[in-house]
Length: 255
Image (cartoon, rainbow, N blue to C red; front, side, top):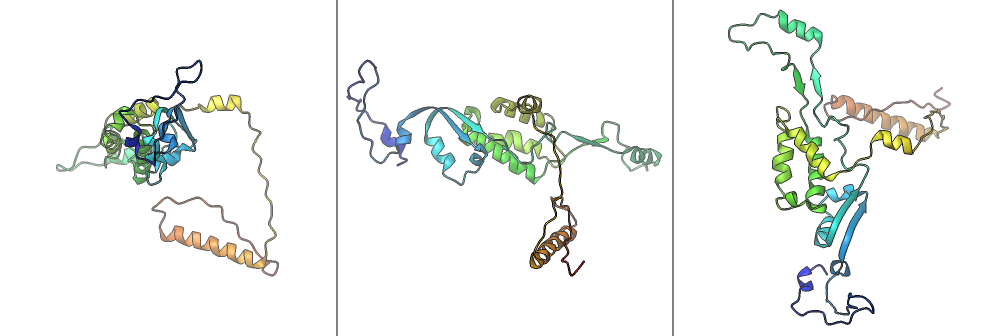
């Protein structure tokens, strides 16, 4: 059903045309070829399009076989960690106390000179979660949208965008600007101020609702919280840890 080589034949279509049109009323049969592959599509649009970042399903390989003029991805979450406008370029400046301590130290003959004011700014080092998002973005651009520059060389995103950003010492010079240009080339994004003008949301209100839980449910809930707390302490919070608000529930007998 996906052998598109069967669509090509040296025998021209001899079917009659529709009355008043130059489009033939084709009745030619192409055995074992999906009807979707026999159509020249104007536009292909997928909702929740971030699923196209995964190459393990049949969506992207089949979409690459389709004859499509324009491809669109609609998604509110194209990536998970590449959020905000900083894109990893935010810097962390050492505190005034640290700078004063560094200035008060007397450098030894073999020690390196104290860092300058510009060296005091340390660019955030991108991590493995950023790499996952960059790989997802690269898959969407290269394989589904099929941008010609990247589709011709599937490793171009990795060598020219991802690796310069993931340097152990921080993004290389111009690496973030390259990512910005790539995203501007293929993405259209609603600005927050535009969304707020179109959709006026009601004010956020919070209300606490006390749950009357069964005694066994209370014990199970407290046990689950204890497991989460122990895991957070045991891992020493060295990895991504979700923030939880822990509430203890008590049965009437415990009160």
